[in-house]
Length: 483
Image (tube, rainbow, N blue to C red; front, side, top):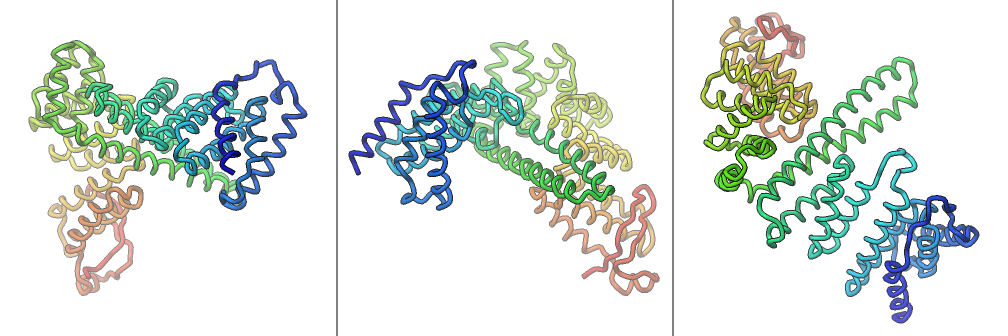
């Protein structure tokens, strides 16, 4: 058995020296189509049997591997299954042969490169998939052997350069971790972590935006299908919606992960020290100024002189929504609400979804501080439209409602604002689990102001009845008693 295993290892490693992609004009079944189809059948059947046993070691066969190898070597364009199944075979060898792990990782890398050459276009979507393949290659290298972080980093870096939209959350996570390893081992400068962090944050923000827009479109299509009684179409759309919402959650989790990984590099003092040196070297670098203002804002380091200097300089060199946003922050910190509102209004024109959301949120805060509660609510609603998966705007509206209780008189009317406020908190946590803690805290606080049951009864109402909150709020809520 040991001899057979050694021969198999040698054969697989030797593939790296013998594989070459077929010419585009050659049949996908290679020069010997009969042998290719035969070997596809042999390894395919054996693979299915192995898969049926949940990849049990005792069901793994050398014959399967030999047939798969012949297909891979001689007709690499036969089917993408050659690669997806090949990954599983390599995974088995890597896990069960630790001494030869790196040799199998080499074979896996060569296999991924061959797939990118053989199938640069996804047969199903008819779009390029090279970036996705390279991203997966980098992730697999890193996951199997973190000591090979440099190879992983280079593969993932090239994937981002090709098409960042193809990177899944796991690829992004591996890229950022390998970037940190590069910096910690002196192979990249500290600024690289900051640059990659911003780059990946934007990728994730774009992913979330596209997916959220897709959910809106799918929901609209579902309403149409439902009205036409197309049950099968509704069920199919439900699955697509569920898949998109799961992807949104995964992207948010990845974003949270890289935020946490960035923390050791993200103290205000460290960021200001690194960015100050860079800005001194190239004070007119617009891209650097954007990076400074974006990251310092995200990490709440906007009180620094560096942020203000960068914001002013950026606006001089390239007036833009981004520059306006930074100046809005400056005036907001100075409590100059009207000036801040002017710049935040301009900043809402940005193409960056995360920045547009923040601009609307901050603009709403300006109007709130100026006492224009109805206008503030309208702006918070716009923020919610920009990022439908974010519960924060509803919490802000809830606080607006609760804060205006003194504007209403009457035993019921003055309490009704708290019902409406709790409704918004419930909405916030239903769409965004990350704000559930804040929402529950507010719900607990506002529920204390609900009227007693006898007050409700005395005013000829009953619990569970609808109630219209008048004034500037103008919403219908549900009557609830204090518990």
